[in-house]
Image (cartoon, rainbow, N blue to C red; front, top):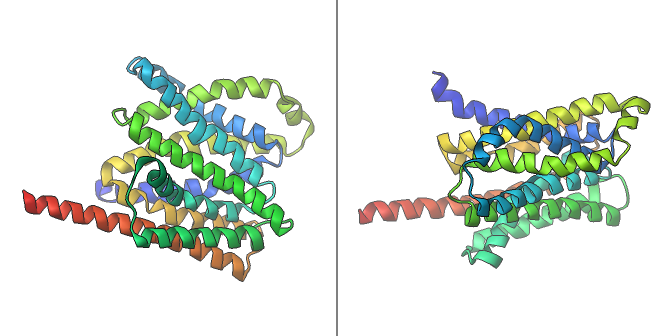
Length: 306
């Protein structure tokens, strides 16, 4: 019975964890700067995975290490800072929805760099998603004027582009390595410079002088240990059990959870906000649906040939 529902448990759990990460970042910013939040998150995740990384390191070729470290920087360390900086000015629910742009930039990067072929529906999905992102950032996404909101929205776009680059690096350079092997080495690797950076800041004095700092550290610990180290491992397990299509369903659920936390935290939501969110998720749906149909067609064709 447990085995039958295990993939669904993973899907729901991961969606709740990653959808909650944006409100956790917001709480972390109550005691620390964006750079400190990002660095503390990497330290928490890296320390947890360090024993596993020590084992995997002995099995890893030296020529692969530079790409694994690059994955840690582009896929974790830098985006964690960009998300934190953006959330100083944008609502956490908006940031959660903008994060759903990742499939679009992964697709665009594949077209521009790796020569991936794209159908008209996917181009329509990209256009619809960008229109939704524009609405979110310009109208109801932040607390300042529309131009400033757009600038901080671009930080999320930059983070998502880095995610897309990271995914393509893994596919093109690290395809022979296991996901656990990559994660358990990359996160401890970026934790080292994160610790060095934190030692040059006022992170310890903040714990003593800012009343909210101890609680913020607790939120960041949850973010790093559960939202990064544990969640990445469970996501890899979900990929193994049910494959890519079920795993990508998280793309649609995470923004809903982020919006729910935004409502609980009294973040204002207007009609333009909902229109923007609908456009973003609609664009992601068109991209994933077209990709799914193409994969199914390839499978059918292969079966006929056999």
